[in-house]
Structures are given as C-alpha cells and as structure tokens.
Amino acid sequence: MNENWDISGRDVVPDLRALARPADVGASLLHAMLHSVGKPWRPPYDDVRKNLGIRSKQVAPELQEQAESRFRTYLALFRGLGLLYEDAGTLQSTDFGNELITHLDEQYQRVDDFSQELYTASCERLAQLVVPVLSRYQLANPLTSAKYPEGTDVRPLLAIWRAMRALDNKLHWEELGRALTPCLRDSEVPDAIEKIRNARMQADYDPSNPTLMESILGPRRPDAGKDQSDRLDTWFSRAAFKGLLLEPRDRQDGYRHLSAAYVSLIDNTINEPPPYNPTPDRAEYVRWLGTVSHRRTAANSHSSDRMVSSIVEKCRRYGDRQIIALVGPAGTGKTRTAQEAANVLTEGDPTRALTVQFHAGFTYEEFVGGLAPVNGTFVPSPGALVRINDSALANPDKTHVLVVDELSRADVANVLGELLTYIEYRERPFLVPGLSREVAIARNLVVIATLNPADRSVVNMDDALVRRLRQIEVPRDLDALEYILDTSGMDEALKIQVLDWFKGLPADAPFGHGLFVGIRNVADLHDLWHESLRYFLRRGGLTVYPEPERIEQGYSWRHHNNAIEGSL
Image 1: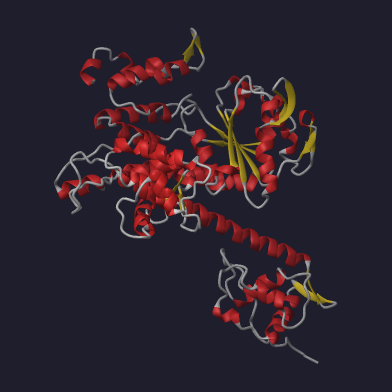
Image 2: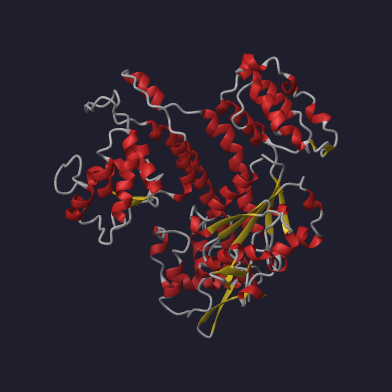
C-alpha cells in the first residue's frame, strides 16, 4: 500500500496548444483516437493508424512506426484524463473528449481557412502586379533577335487572354498554334478568334486530330515538327505567369483554362489595353515594360484586403443563421467588397455564387419562385434564391453565396418572404406555393446583402428583419481616394486639397470615395459637384441631408467657373 503519491511512468500529457495541427506525438495520437471513436479497439489498431495522417499529407516519421503497446499506453493515459475508454472492444469517448475534438477541429479549420485567405489575398496582389506587365509584352521588341515585318504590334499574351475570354475562357494549344501565332498585328486577333469560334461549331471538331485541324484552321506557324505542344505551351506558361492566371495544366483534352478568380482583372486590362511602345532602346523598353504603380499594391489593396478578410470571417461565423449586410453610403465599394468576399468563400468558382440586384419592382416570384408565363401558359419558375440554394444542397461540402445588392430598395418583407424565418432555421422546409414544392435553406448557403442607410426604406425595416441582419459598416476610405486620384493623374497639390476636404467630412456624409473615379482637375471637380454630389444634399428644392453646409464648406471648386479653362 502506497503511503505517498505514485510515480507516473512518463510525462506524456499531449500538447494541445498548437494552432494548425497536433504539436507532438501524444496530441497526434489523441486526435487520431478521438476520430476513431465507435471503431473496434484491437491490434493492430488500423483505424487509429489510418487517422494519424488526418492533419498532414504525410505522417511524420516519428508516427510511422507505432508499437501496439504504445497505443495501449496512451489509451491508459487518456482514460485517466477522462477523455477516452474502451468498452466491449470498441473505442468510446466521454463528453470531455467529444467537446475537445470539436474544439480542436474548429481551431484547425479556422487556421486552414485563414491560411487559404492569406494565400488568396497574396495571389490577388501578385496578379495585380503581374497582369499590367504581361499585357505590355510585345512580340516585336528591342530585346529579341527575331526579325518581324514593319508594323508588327501584337501583344501575344494579351491576345491569348482576349481569345480565352471570347472562347469560353479556354484555348487549345492547336488553336493557339494555327490561328493566333500567325497574328502579327493586334487588329488581326479578332478575326483569329472568330475563326476558332466557327471551327468549334463544327460537329466533328476535335483539336486533338492534327489532320482535321490542318483542314479547318490551317498549318501550324511556325511548324517545328510533328508535335509542337511543348513549344507552344511556353506561350501559355507566360500568359499564366507559370500557374497564377491560368488553371493548372492537369486536363487531358489539351485545353488551358483561364482562372475564374482573375477574370475581372483580365477584363479591365483588355478593355483598357496599354499603348504600343515602338522604342528601339533596350533599357527604355525594359523600364517601360516593368513599370508598376506601388500605390496600387499598397494603399488600394491593403485596406480593401482587410475589409474583405473581415467580411469573410463574419460570413464563416454567422452566415449559417444570419444575412451578412454591408452598410454604407453610395460610393464606398459595398458591392465590390461583397463580390470579392463571395469570390474568396467560393474559391473563385463562379457556379457557386449568384448576384441579384433589388429594386422597387422586384418581386417574391423573382427572388424565391412562382409561376412565370411561357408560350401562353404559366409554369413554375424558381427564383434566384431557390436556384443557388438547390446548387448548395447538391454540393453540401462547398460554400455557396447569394449576393443581394441594394437590399433596401425593394419591399424587403414581401420579397424575402419565408427567408426571414428560415435563414435562421436552416434545413427546416417551407412550402413555396408557386413551385408546388418545399424548400429548405442549405447550411452552406451564405447570403451577403448591401444597403445604403440613407435609403428611406431602411427606416421602415421591422425588428424581425433587423434581428436577422449582421450589419457591418463599409466606411469611406481616404487611402482608396488617394489611389483613385493618383490613378486619374490628378496634380499633387490639388490632390492634397481634395484629400484634406474629404478627411474633414462628417461621419454621416452620404457618399464615399468611389464617386471620384476619373476626376483629374478643377473642371472635373466642378462638374462632379453640379452633376452628382449636390444631389445627395438637396433634391427637388428639398434638403435631404441635415446641415448640407457642413459638406459644402471647403469644396471651393463648385464656384471655380473662371478657373476651369486654365485647368483643361
């Protein structure tokens, strides 16, 4: 009989402080055992061994070989800690064990999600740096030894993006080598795209058949032998910036696909292509090619990334029971922020996101569903909510997002209907009469809404709706305004004056930085006031903003009629 404390065989209490994965052998074994609850507990403990790799792609060397006696030793420890026990040959968990594994899994998942957000944000910033440079790259340039005819002005990487956007976001290497590579002028690219589009419409179209492709699209140019895919793929590699802008090269059909995450960035570049630079000077060309606006990656993206990350975190915490509402005045970027958050949540998959804009005439039938006229009769027609919800129900492991823009512009209570109740009580079905079916809101469907607090209908929102909104302010952004004015080319001295005025606006000013896009000089500021800003303060002879003088004060450009000619 002991007359003092016995000596523990070893100090093997697992270290559970790690954030991303189990920190030591004991923590790994505890994690594996808790995930093996309900499974047989007998040598060689296959279920536990299988689950040892649950938090890593490869099991750590110290976990690869575990003696059967070690499993029994650890079970004895965990049993003594009130976590696990064996009953009738089956591994069982206590309430403590159940709560612990839930906590650990949630913690690991939060870190995984945050890591993915950091990775996504990093790739987005990288893409913002890369795309403008790649779009400038010229086939004929002073760095190449190749000789091209006079007038060659094609930007090959920009041409590839243009073709992909026009052709279902994909391009085959045979299409590239037979239709695009012969283009030496930008003006020839649209005809090449149309040639590929017409070819794809043929019933027997098969880009993997060189003989057929020869007859439809013509010879490869240049023709470097029987199989030119690897050599042509170097153009895809450049247009992708390795694996950034195009999807990984893992398809067997030979097509390369544009990454959905960067479609809007590519579109902006296509719509505003860079000028052609005919300089023969190598150093000047390289400097021009590599020009980067540092403010674009600093002022503009930093505050935007923080806001998007915050919205994403709120969506993950509350999106299964509340509507995440982005609240702010006109021009603060609510819609863009909502769509960027949706892009992160859906991992850039456009099939898992849907945007709908409310307006005064928007109906329940358009949003939820009802009868719609088709060929002289009425048939059930699911609305935006039911369509994205059906997709979410069919793919329960992936987050889907419905973005409702301008939520407060519609008769919200009537348009949302049962959603007011069932956004909170997921998976409880409700009947949609016009569809003659029941609908249950999927737990993996997040609803993000935008609303302007100045809308009169906001005052009329009842408590039932307000209770189901998680309202997040999207404020005016001084850094974003500075980036906008820099991008527009505003003179530094004038820009400082505008920023000082903007910084002194009252907290409830009814507009934001976005209204200043494209504003370059005093004349633009004058026009902006008389054509836009003043209507946020007074409309139809009525004052709609209390104390408009607080905003008018300091905006001296509204009086600068005599200074306009000199600023043009």
